[in-house]
Image (cartoon, rainbow, N blue to C red):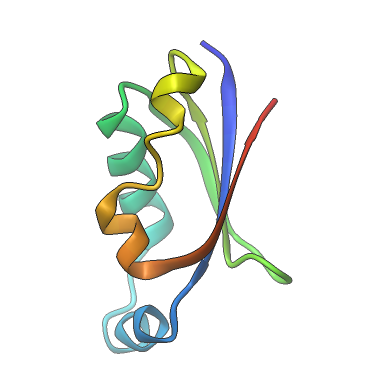
Length: 85
């Protein structure tokens, strides 16, 4: 399966919620999103700069990958970007 990278920036509301209840959301949300399109999470990180998170996934094909971000991810992320390696 090909590797894909997804980057996103958290909304202000999402940052506020994370400050109230800190946990590893990159792992939780990244795994749910990758599995929702038939893939698996390889790794995920918080970043500095234009994007707040980066997730690497193995997904069967680009057609499935284009389904990201899921509705739940769109609620907490703005400015998404997808790339294929």
